Image (cartoon, protein in one colour):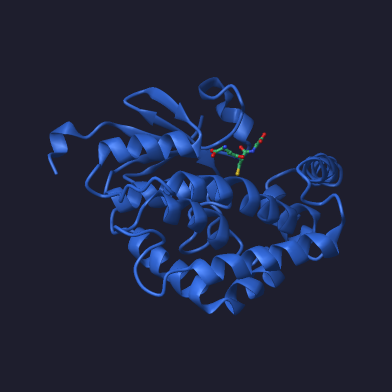
Length: 249
Ligand SMILES: N[C@@H](CCC(=O)N[C@@H](CS)C(=O)NCC(=O)O)C(=O)O
């Protein structure tokens, strides 16, 4: 690779969770971290406690945003498309990849958000992990208000509307469908590792953290799916760690 041609890359994201092998609790930031590492592109990190802190670079107030030579590229789908242009030899191209990416970013993400914010079994761990740095008096109020808003969103997305039992039944059925399609060898689509792997990995690997033990157990029960996840993890951990972390914005 011609290092002179490499652009300067800065990933605007959330705080590092401090867990080995997990760069972010955000599945979309995790997806981008792993794409950058797999592409072998060096980058710096600008972490903030709240996605809206990066609003100057993304009017939706969401993360991730990648600064490419100072130009803001928001949204993980756009970012992966840009990385595919920057490192075309690294990512397998397939017309189906965007369908899988859409499934991961919408349907699978709905279950991930429900597992952390709506599932009573996991809410205490989620609250502790997300709001640890908040002063105690504020922490007694704000997380529950945010939780109510997130759960309203899950009802609107039709993830939580019929209640927990229906939600987790659908979740198990989706995992079964994915398990049946997971490749026994290699990556999700023919031709090698690509966008489908990175997008599905971002959401499904995020279900394997200590925040959501029941959901992690359900993923572990699907052996083909879990083995493929381990393969993507191994391939994308990358020797190339970020150049350095910077606090920001
Ligand atoms: N479509 C976006 C979704 C990004 C997203 O939902 N990010 C979350 C963090 S995991 C966020 O910023 N949430 C704050 C909000 O929606 O206000 C992408 O693919 O990047």
